[in-house]
Amino acid sequence: MLDIVIEARKASLGPGMDVKRILPFRQRRMVGPFIFMDHAGPVEIQPSAAHTMDVLPHPHIGLSTVSYLFGGQVTHRDSLGVEQIIRPGEVNWMTAGSGIAHSERFEDPAALAGGNLEMIQTWVALPEKDEEAAPDFENYKPKRLPIFTDNGVWMRLIAGDAYGLRNDVKTHSPLFYLHVVLEKGARFGLPREHSERGIYVAKGSIEVANRTYTVGQMLVFSKGGDPIILAKEPSTLMLFGGEPLGERFIWWNFVSSRKDRIEQAKADWKEGRILLPPTDNLEYVPLPADRSKPAGGPAPQALS
Image (tube, rainbow, N blue to C red; front, top):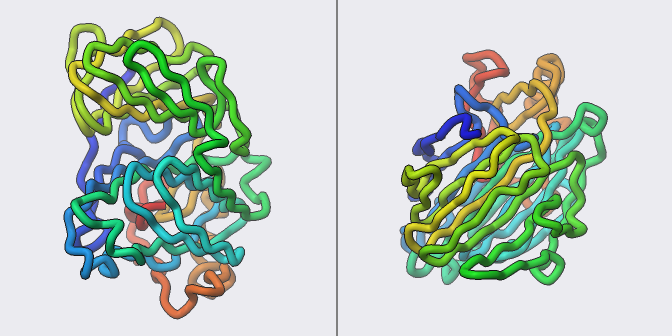
């Protein structure tokens, strides 16, 4: 059953870096454990201005960030000392848990040539028992991510399980996340085993129940029924969802089941108790002015 159609909103992260923001949405804050989604690019900017897009060190708690690139590359540095160049087709899963800071920098001008940079950023909320887990980062190469092809359908399992596919990406709750490419005329169905399911149209257009949906739209389905997706043209989709975790509060880059934990995270960042990346510690994003409650605070910072 189709619950809601979400239209991406424009959000500016800095000069030349506008993104399509899909989640959170006022009428639908989460899909399964997924609480945040941005679609950045294709970025049209002169390679010489790449530094203006850099995302300075900033903090997270209570979530995992997932970075997935269609094109270009980004350099990730975090307070664990990890330094990782993120390339297309890889899964970069950072669990913030009790607290981590990281930066994302665009250090290879050639990676921006011809509007090549394009990426999807999602946040996955953690179950209550894992909200204070030790921070962690893992880079998964494409060879560790199963691919399925059939009748005009190509798909890569980013994380979780769906259609009988599994991989070793470490997750904390039942979910699925897929990159799907459809040829014109291809038909495709949603996985049935998950309670909440979303389809984000990254490229092209699709038809579901005789209605057409295009780039920047996300369809959210509850369990039950088996909607058929028809590609009206060559299309790229991100499919994701899973089991709901219960209410979560989000303020800036902090996610928690408890408002008081978010208040603590604010103080921790302001007082320097969340460490900066050791190889990127000369500048950082300051705590935003607090003008609203945690459930609807300042827009999340950056790509992840």
